[in-house]
Image 1 (cartoon, rainbow, N blue to C red):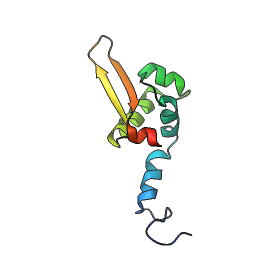
Image 2: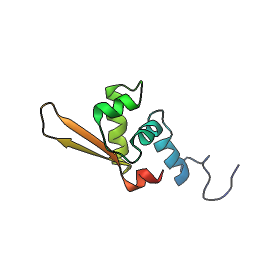
Image 3: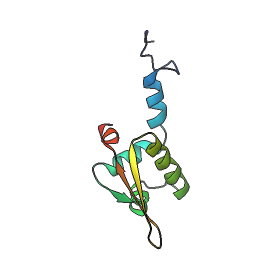
Image 4: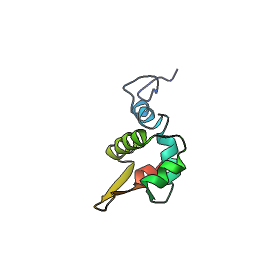
Length: 92
């Protein structure tokens, strides 16, 4: 066990909070799929095989709130949404 301030086994540790954010089933796959490119919703869903529309929407919005990616919605019919990693997301 690691002692001191940076102990990932302690739920209050900043490193644990980061792991909780990026360690879910879909986040790593979304980040990898985006890489250094911008993808539309359907292209991102195709790149991350097996993810439902609901999970892609929930996960991407949560990672947007965390500052890891940007989501741009365009007023088109049907609606167009594009995703791109922020510099912080690219640093992962």
